[in-house]
Image (cartoon, rainbow, N blue to C red; front, side):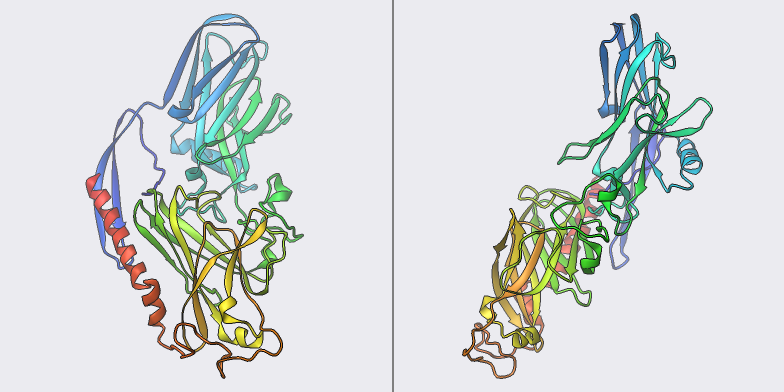
Length: 452
């Protein structure tokens, strides 16, 4: 499943052309006819009383809601909310208002008018609260499941107002002076977010956003970064202090209900090789980000156990997505260099992955898989994704190593060095499993296109 916003004309049939292409260059295409309904919502009130609030809910129709409080008594008052889909209007907004600030319209525009009273006259309008709603798909423009650098920043959403003269003005509390108040309710789980302004007259309104900036200090721009720890250098999109991030690697795979998902990593220095789980919903393309860190994650405030090999963060999708409702049986496959084990005198059987959750480090079920000339390979089961460490216990003074060269004894082969890397792939079902999963996903996408 994927989403892509396109401009259609209301009250007529529109043709949508779909093309699916796999990594090998094979493609299939189909066309479907989409009927777009009217983009205007009208509600008529038989009477409105002075200082009584009328709520007009058009969230499902055009993604907006108003709470209108009149200064006068009137009968047969109609509230008209129209979604603006005209691309020219959006382009004019982008070109006229945001050349310097870098803001961009999100495609959420609504024109609000009232018949039966003068909504531009402050003597007749006590106040109007205008709410414009948005979803994750409005922020995640490429649909990969992660809101990344250059995509709209939820901490920097604003409402602009179009005056009769055609000029666009940002609306913030007391700026202009007829803006009584403003604010935002962010996305929470499956509930959409919305930005709101309380004003004294109506016209056309648009939702805009600043792009997410690399290493942006969200605490310094009205938002908040997650987790503990702090840094004068600011934080990345994940909330981790940017100077603590050594390597970042993000892979994206389609998640379908009942289908095994495999993320494969190969960036030099990234000890994470695979992340696997079974999809429980049809979620489309979801990103899985690995951050290899210089030191303990700044998102935690507790020292990890034992001798730490690597500190890292792993995030799947947006915050709160990777739960037992969406995925099952998640595992992480990783490597540990033999040289570190030898130099630090580590008991190989004690090497574990630990996950930070509920304010403490929790040991994960970790199993030895195989080894080659340079590394040992492990797999851990995890109930979720957050900061992690890989650590082991150092051998006490007086204990002797059982493997002359590496200082490591494999419980699986009695110390025999397995140099054939395919053994790791076979024991974890990879990478052939990843290839098979990708083919299944491609076939499913093509099947869905043909079905539609």
